Every structure is written in structure tokens, then in C-alpha cells.
Length: 427
Figure (cartoon, rainbow, N blue to C red):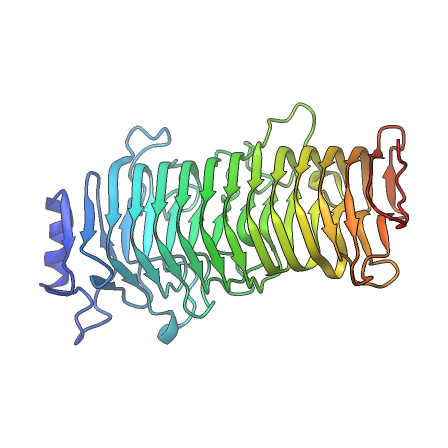
């Protein structure tokens, strides 16, 4: 079976079988780097028996592409529909050939309803899966309804871009997946939602749940959302829940959200939810910049070198209408920043958050809550619990001299902080 024959099967069949261990494996031991730049089409399922069915992708190539050019239209009516990949392995050549930013194993554009299930996606030079707006610059195409279930993304040596990239998407479920050994230090991270600087780009209705992240890197986060200022629409309805993260070596966060715009009262709600996650041994638990309306609930964050960030040092990196409920922080900010840093922020409420041994143990950096540079108003810490079993935490709430705090609307209610000082009034 040669490459042309395989390509014809994609064009002429509704189901293309990648044969398992008992039959033909497309990796073909004598020609392991033959396959690349295959194309799939509407109403085609690519199915294997199990991960012993291997499609080994030639270095410097896409693996399988959907609508790589300018097919379709800007409304989605001409999108490729009902495409699926199930039950086989896609292997790239990052170990032998190294990093190549735009060489993706699945290169998917202009689709409506696309399913990925029970795949092993490993050794990608660029992305494992790329969901874009075509591979031609400034081509408006929108994607609808993507799901990935029981997929293992293994970057092998952290010398790749992202495991899963969304340039434009409305409707995502990522469930019961694994993200291992992904992303070099100057790339975003395992899951990256980052449109190009086009006004029409869309990121909304995304759910990441019950997935594992281990030994990853990057400069944005395990799950990251980065919206250029040129994009008109705010990202909306973003959920990360019941996930586990361990051993993140990058400079980002378990969850990063940055929209590059001020969250004004009239701005559309972001509606993000970060809940019931367990994360350990990373850089920042989360960083939320330029977001309006979100819930951070019942997460456990342990051993992070820097603080979680709610709003930063300029208005376009501020936050508004954020609730933090029943979260636990243990030994966070052990290098700098304390447990939670609040900068430009309006209407932030913490309820029953518990923080233990946060801060670096040194004056100026040994606080649980840091009110950082920026305008902060309506900051309410309700039933905040602070403990310091090892004496690392010296201050419950510390206010930077450059923080413009509205004392009339900000307060602590029923704090449980022992004898630790706090630069926020109790009312």
C-alpha cells in the first residue's frame, strides 16, 4: 500500500481503517518516515483497532489535514461535517528531528462536529492537534463542536509547541485526557487557546475536565487563553474542572486567562469557572488578567513558587466580579508573591479560602494576600483562614505602597488569622 493509495482511500470512503497489530501498520518498519501530508474530508472516520495501529509521520510534515487551504466560507455553512479519529497512534519525529513550530500531527480547519477518541498522539514537532482558521493568513473560518476523549498527548521531550491548539472554536469538550512531557519554554503550553490578531476570531463554550497534566512546560500555562487586543469578542464560558496538574516546569500557571482589555462594567461576561482541580509543584496556581465574572471554587494548590494573580498592574489586566470559594493554598509563593496577589480589581470576594505556609518567610514577601500595584475596590475577604505551621507566613494581608485601595468598600469579615497583621480593615 503506497501513499497515493492511502490518500485515495481518504477521498473515496466514509471509513478509513488503520489496521492494528495483526495486519498492516502504516508506520512500515522499513520506511518509518514515509507518511505525511495526508488529507481527510467531510463524513470520514479514521479508525484503528488500538494504539498498535501506528501512523508514523514524516519529519517536517503535517500528519493528516482537514481544509488546510481556503475551503469553506466565513459563516461555517460550508464547513466539513462529521469527521472523526478513533483508536490509533499518531507519532511524530521530535526526538530525531527536533522542534518545528508549524508541523502538526492533526491539522484541522473549518469543521463542524469533529471527534477525537482513544488516540495516542506523541512526538509532535509543533502541535499534536491544531484547530485553526486554515493555514492561509487572515482567512476567516470558524470551527464548531470539537471533542477529545481518552486521548494521550505525549510530547516525549518537551521540545514542541502545544499538545492542543485552538485558534478559533465554539464548543469544546476535552475529557479524560492526558498531557505529558509537552511544550518547550518559549511556547504557550499543553492546551493553548490563542487566536491570531483578527477581529473576527472566537473562543467560547470550552470545557476541560477530568484530565491529567504532568511534566509540562511553557510560558502561558497548562491551560491557557491569550486573546490579542485586535480580537473583538471576549472569550466566554470557559471551564476547567476536576483536573490534576503536577510537575509544571514553565513560567505560566495551571490556568491562565489574558484578554488584553479592561473588563469594563458594560463588557460581555467572560464566565470562566476553575473548580475542583488539584495542582502541585508549579509556578503560579492561576493568573486572571482582563476578565469579567468568574468562579474559582474548591481547588487545591500545593507548592507553587509564585502567587496566584487576580488582576495585575494596569487596567487592561484587571478583573471584575470574581468569586473565590473554598480553595486551599499550601506553600504557595515560596519564591515570591505570597498566596494570592490582587492588583487592578473590582468586586472580588473570597469566601472561606484557606491558606497555609504561603509566602517566602522574608519581610516583604511573607504574606498570604498581597494587594499589589493598581486600583482595588470592593475587595471582600470573608472567613479567610490563615495558618503558618512553620512560621513562613508573617502577614495575612499586605498592601503595596502603589496599591490604591478603596477602604470604604473593601474589608475582612470574620477572619481567622490568629495574631498575623493585616492591612485591610475588619468590618
